[in-house]
Image (cartoon, rainbow, N blue to C red):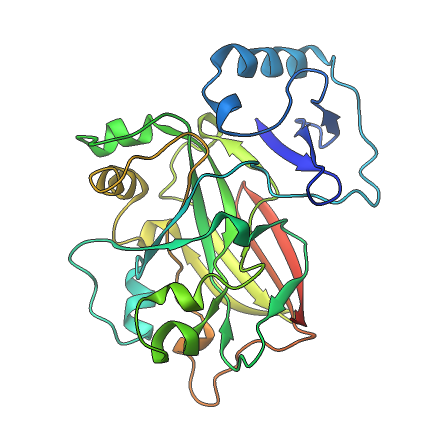
Length: 285
């Protein structure tokens, strides 16, 4: 299923995109798309049955904002330097273990919402990423196979980053990762049963119409199952938590000087095959 949330920010309602591309209203069946829903097999079954029976009312998608596909996110765990080609372009050694950092849940916005370039920023960068949505409480998982069984679904994430704040200002990466609007998510939460192999997903990103990133999750240093297993050794993952799994080569940081960092007025578009497409205009904070 392709689950999403539509409406004004803070007042989104649950919806489903059916096989024919029609937007369907779920608000008569479930309250929201969130961790509570993802753990409720009965509710998910009712949604699936209603969709298959054609019982869900259609929504007029014209002018309707798409919000983040997941409400009440607990935490956003991020994996750094998780693609071989991205490590090479930045001159970094491939990590021996996954690099973990966090984004606050309040950085998450809709897939087509405006993204704000922070004040005094000169090095705002783009990163298309596969986001994993946790569907079952996970702690001390023993195998990648067990970890994949705890995944509810997948989404497109844009891990927007400010490289000066991240790298040059001391401390951890978090200062360059948690600026307002720095995690567009969606358009859909695609349930795991629709993704046959999370390691075979093409990812692409364009800036002002120019292709910048063109990679595949096959190039991940640590595959999705291993990432979820590994993270569960250090923290408990709860339904509705999100893991951003890293970006392929092609970011501004890896380009020759002068590096083409983002400015107000730039338009970024990104997609992952089967998971949908995002478009953001950048404006000054």
